[in-house]
Length: 291
Length: 213
Image (cartoon, rainbow over all chains, first blue to last red; front, side, top):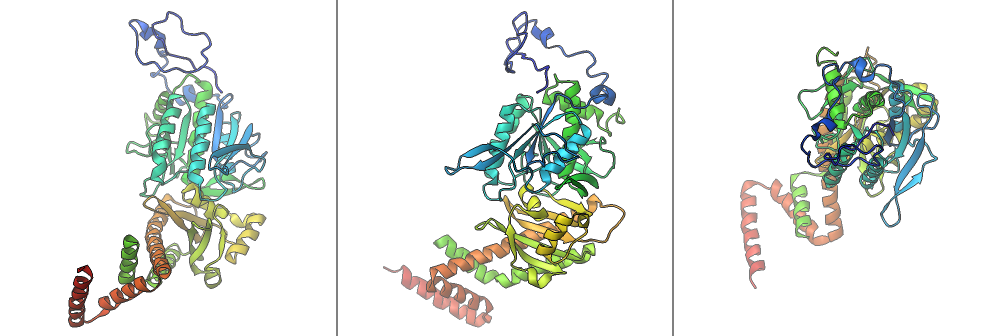
C-alpha cells in the first residue's frame, strides 16, 4: 500500500494524528480548520504529465487484477505478489483460497502484462473470479470485489462487467465504498447498447478504446458515461504459455488506464480517487493539448 | 400454469423453432459475407449444463459442428462470455497449443477471430464469432461496432429460439391438453377468414359452456 494517506477527521484538533490507522471521513469542518486540509499550491496550476507521473515506475502502488487469474512468472508480467481464487462453497458462501493454478483462460494474464508494461515496479495481485464456469459468476465477482476493497488495494483492474440487475445495487455500494476508501476501480465500458455494471457508476473510472498506437495516449470523453478512452486496438498482450499475441478490445484499454493510475499514485500517494480523476482529466491528450 | 400455457400458445401461433433457427443461420451467413470471413458461428450458452453449444455455423466446418459442446469459460468464446466484453485476437496460428485446441473444436486453425457476447436485456445468451476476416492493415473500431450490430440481431434471434424451446418443453411436459390448444391456435391462424370466423364463434360457445357452473 502506498504511504501518504492521512485522516482528515476531527478537523477541530490542533494537530492531526501523526500515524493515522485508517481513513476516517470528515462529516463537518470546524472554524479555522480549512488550513488543515489545504491542498499544495502546485495544484492545480502546474498539473502536467511530467508533474503527474514523470519518473514514476509505480513503485509502492498495489494493483489487483480481478479477472481469470494471472500466469505466474510470465515474461511480460513478472512477479505476482499474491494470487487468490474465489469459489462458491457447499453452503453457497463465497470462499477464498490461495490460487496455485495461475490463469485458467488468459484474460487476466493479458491485463496484468499491460499494467506491468506501464508501471514496471508496481505490486501485482491476482484475484481470480472468472474461469470456473459462467453459472454463479455474479456472486463470485461480488465476493472478489468486496475482498479487494477490504484489502485496500490502490487500484483494482476490472476488465469485465455484468448485465445482471440483481447485482447492480451491491456493486454500486462496493464501488462507492472503494471510492471513499481510496481504492480506484478501473472498469471496462461496453461499446454496445446494453446496461451493464460496474463501469456505468460515476465512482469508478470507466474506459473505452481508441485507435492510437501509443500506450500513454488517453482521451477524456466529454459525453459520458464512458469517461476515458485508452489504447485498445492492436495491442500486444501476454498469452498463456509465456507467449504474446495481438488483440483488440476494451478489456485491454482498461489496464492501460490502471497502469497510468498506478504511475500517478506512486508519485502522489495523497491523491483521492476524485483528485486522481482530475489529474487524468488535466493530463488527457484532448485537454489543454495534453500538457 | 396459465402463464406457461399462454407463452406456449403464443409461441405456437407466432412461429416455430425452425424459423428462429433459420433467422440465426441467416445472421451468421450475413456476418460472414459482410466481413468476407472464412467462417462465422453462434454459440448458445446452455445454463443447465454450464456449457457453450454451437448453434449456427456459416462457412468452414458448418455441418459437423452444430450441437458440439464445451465448458462455458474455456476458449476465446469463453473469455467473451464470462467478461461480457467483445474481443479481437490476431496471429493465433502462431500458438501451437491454441492451434491444436482450435482444430479440435472448429475443424480448422483460424489466423484470427472476432468474438462478441450476445446480450439481451439482462441476460447473457451466448457468443458470436467471426473467424479469419481478410488481413487488412489494421483492425478498426468501426468493425467492432459493426460486429456489435450483428450481435444484437443474433441475440434477439437466440432469445426467440430459446423461448420457442421453452414453450415446446412446457407443451411436452404438460401432455395432451396444452398441445391440443397450441395445435388449435396454429390451425386457426392458417384458416380461411370464413372458417376462422366460424371457429371463433364455436370457441365462444365452448368458453360459455366452461364458464357456466
